[in-house]
Amino acid sequence: MEDLRIAIVQYAGDFREASRRFANGGPENYRAQRFTVDYVHDLASRVSAVTTITGFTEEKYEETLPSGAQAVGAGFHSAFDHTEMIRAIKAFGPNRIILRTPDRRLLRWVAKSGIPTLALLADSFQAKSLKDHVTRFLTSRYLNAKCIEIVANHGKLATEQLIEMGVDRRKVIAWDYPQFNTPDQNAPKTMPAGRTAFYVGLIVAAKGVGDLVDAAGVLKQAGRPIDLRIYGNGDVEWLKTYIAQRDLEDVVSYHGVLRNDKVIETMNKSDVIVVPSRHDYGEGLPLTIYEALCSRTPLITSDHPMFKGLLRGEADVPQFRATDGQALAGRIDSLLSDPEEYERLSRNSAVAWNAIQVPTKWDRLIDDWLQRDVAALKKSA
Image (cartoon, rainbow, N blue to C red; front, side):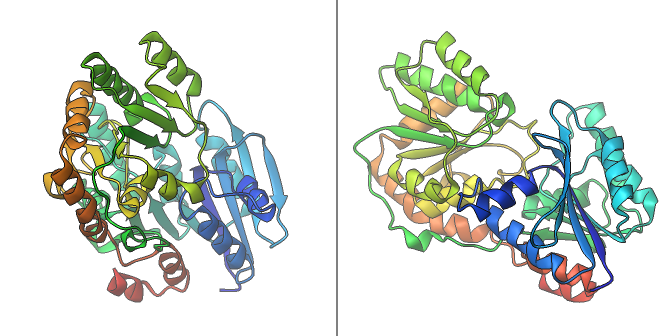
């Protein structure tokens, strides 16, 4: 693979910042972050050149890191500028592209470029409005371009959705990260003495964070309060204002960013975990779900299309109607009032975890594609 010049193109997730943090002994921000960064550094020793071009970074930069891997930060803060991303790709001059964002305008350019491309996604595509349908049509059309050789998505349902929206099934593959934790590392739990609810993730309305706060308010008003603890980054000021306006500071607290190596441990010490994503958030399959199932603390999710059908509802992971804080409050209170159900869901977390596993892993997917061994790649899927 010595003659390859590979451009890894992504919306966010600053490669240079993560590399520096790990070199200084810092923690991961999410599961498998160190694994993916290390993979790219190793790749730099096996090919002519590799660069990671990231849209949203604190500052604009171009730098070659000690491993030889290059990093480009576009410095976006408010809007994704596909023309600037295209300029950076052209300046590098790749003969392979790993595209990690389905931005439609960037995707259109890649489809026309003729450069062999692996679309490595972790996204879903809604179909509610006319605009959604147009987006799905154009996205599938560009992904079907001959130069986009493999279209991979994170998780089974997100991958099936690509086929449903028109992407050629012969090039579609589901992928996952290697598993560094399993439910077997924690014993099933019995009914807790407390009522601690846990959320970790991006803090934006579309992730259902406000709906979870509303559920805490419903339970407080009913005399059945929970202790809701929220971790993550994003629109923190919005969250604090949202909590204060509802006079819920006594039952809802924000705890900043949680080190990824502490996530499962903190989940295990909590009494219920909630992933309340709204349907309009383009989930693939959140890493938080894997971690929650490994922690053995019962998980409640919304009925987001990427969860419904993959997680077996009442059998393993109770769900509620997205955006409905009242319904979520009922789910939480019911779970924390039923020792038998609580213990059953904790035991069944191993079943739910096994059901979402995918054999094709991130690193093997890229290696097989770069080595032009697409047949082996498809066989492993």
